[in-house]
Length: 47
Image (cartoon, rainbow, N blue to C red; front, side, top):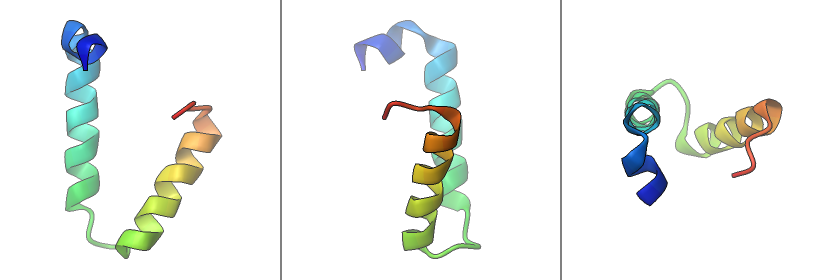
């Protein structure tokens, strides 16, 4: 959180992404989790 608090644009982007994912109702929750993991893998996200 300390890193995010010192980089407001990154924090804002994270918040917007989380809000968009929470609003997405087209996929079951279990499938959304798999999609998030796959996308993170594709873009090389270490988390």
